[in-house]
Image (spheres, each protein chain N blue to C red):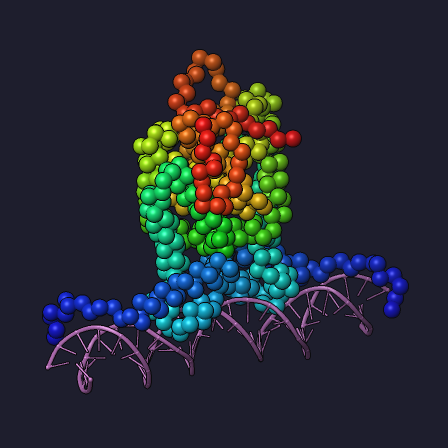
Length: 212
Length: 212
DNA sequence: TGTTAAGCGGAGGGTGCCTCCGTATCTTCG
DNA sequence: CGAAGATACGGAGGCACCCTCCGCTTAACA
């Protein structure tokens, strides 16, 4: 009818609000009930109708993905904030710890993520990229401050973190990971040459495979 | 009333048969349709009523576990057979390859297994034990024959195998793993052969690979 | 304030989950 | 072999959840 249809309306306020509510509810419900939690439960918790949920997220996977993306972005933002902390080493340590906590609360979601990552590895790429950048910024700062060695790449660190968290079905894994992370961070510090302890008799570690 | 009911009847033939049918059907359906495949589809495929399925396996997890256990036991039996093969190194290699195939066909089940392993790590213990023994018997024989070095434990080998298969969402992972396994087995030999070209052992004639 | 399209909610048809129980079949024993 | 009783079978049925569809509501814009 009218010819200036290229004019876009402001999105409706209630739509924005509801979308946010659903995401928040989904985070809670999935974390508690695992990947097969009822979507109707999510809708109820969010205080919206089931139809509203489906309009915003047509499939269960869409909802998963949106929740997970948001979490990754929050971790990313946390890194941004921590950039301004006084002690760069401590900032990095804190970020790593937040990450462990993130995994811990997502216990129910891990299987779902395994599924999702298989189907759309675009999401995997996105989150890897995002997290690598986050960890990189913190790492760089510590290195620039002369507090950490510079021969470890962000990818390495991320891989180590993910690898450590991978065993999160064992009991007491969380404290174990936290301990290992502390050791890891300590090992990353530029150390006074006097305090060099003998290496274990493990086989030689392959050199860090630098990417890019 | 009855106090000497300790007399045990022979299990009914149809019960045994149906149980087996359900397991076989479940293997197929889960592999194809993933962990959330319909149990009624399993029952239909098995040619039994849904009630029969539920009597044998009260929960979905019970069924999963039974299927997985059976697979592990089959791998175990395969090792038993391969014990009598002429060439111990080739026997080991074949077992490792069967394992890769096993993982490949279970593509849909991986997420399910992640879930199951979290809840009942007793199953994980069982399968680890079983597979370690299987791989150990083959390894020992090759070592006893003087064809392989003796400083690698069955656990190491199993871990390497599992670790290699863990990346089975990448495209082309299977051939990659097979290649790595060949390299690995070559590395395990007492006398590393001078660059044997990687080959795919389709035939049952392994002798062509022997050269030194 | 009126117009209009974007958004909302929930009824409803469909599917799968799981239980329950009348019926069929197998084992045992006379 | 045949009866008796234990054991297993099948599927109807009630319930929860999935997802679509559409009449009603409400926010944006003029």
